[in-house]
Length: 540
Image 1 (cartoon, rainbow, N blue to C red):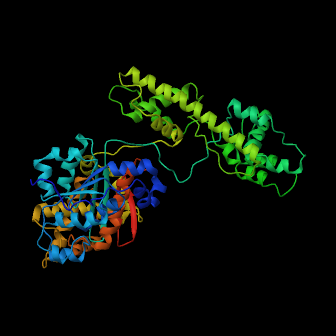
Image 2: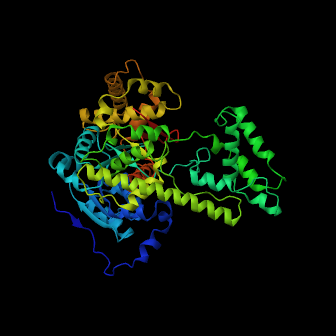
Image 3: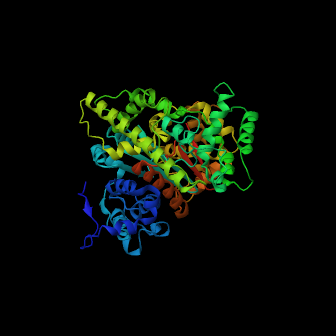
């Protein structure tokens, strides 16, 4: 194996502190400085730098990933000029890894770019420890056997793996990692943490100081925050309903009518907001079933090997059972609403004070757990605990099965369901045919339709191989459409740039989720069907 080489020299001048914020301004608004710092500390390894791999890595280089290492033992061919924008005519005959590395370095000179001229399959077999140095490995265009071997290696080294493949008009992306916890999951829709149906003493006391029947001055009634209105109305409802809140459709309508009855005039926006936000009162108090499942997980019993995430989950479990009274720590923010400045600021202070108090309790519990398991009580920073508290209701945990398990022992029920489903049959068909193509290549030393001539024979062979694979998977009698098999042969294992760019883009998006630990990565095997213009996840 050749030593890692830098493709070009860095610019002499050191960038100023302001430059990264200007350069990455738009993405900083999405994942913040913490997410950007994680990207800049990440080390990414790309296996095979054809169009799919080059497009995936290009997006990460532009995003400011810290270090990239490209592994590819091939040279640039004339055909590469038609589908890979990271090589040019001058590159023909030269190392593909070196050429792509140089082009990518030009896109962002703050990225540390390196390359190794070696066949990835050889590296997987002869030097498995090589992969332990990386944050994530992006493996493109590998056949099934190599995917399985690499997955075992990466799991052993606790390195995240993203498998990517484009094949004609089909694409495949699969994440593999033992466990991926997400604190800042950024859900598209989530209820504000207002505790309207479970107010704490300080909020109750504040609400009691405000009279909903106030008439002087005239504007006072119009500037009572909807939080106050709903807490009062919920308490009033509970008094007359044996302590219960509205649960049926009729009761919810009755509750909204009760709120509406308190309006003095029809131009009171605060009461309109209260009616629109009434559903927040109806939401069940306490933590979600997903968070409950998390704190009931066996890993929530912290030990000396527990990650920071699981130590904080253990502290959360204690908090919910004790100080939280069934609730997670308060987030501490309130949305915009019609209100007098005085009421809004007072509300803000009450929510912030409660969030800070909850954080201090959580911090103490985290320190006690760390001490108990023989770790430095200050080894988890305040900012980490604070972020955990703020997002405690939105915690996510992704666990992925081994690639080998999916390939050798998938859910037969799911495969049959997908094949029978008109909407998913194309995706499932491509999944089977991508695997059948690898078996075909192992038997005939070429992919179906890869070389001129013998197309009819390749179609027949691929069909036989696919049926054999289905039988091995326990789907006896299942068949694939002849049109799909014909198309698979017509693809000839080619990487079409437009498909590679799309699939590579999907892969880089998932890498960013994994590195920043923000947003929820895909759970399942992603299939792009360019014929039907569909992107679908198969959970096998």
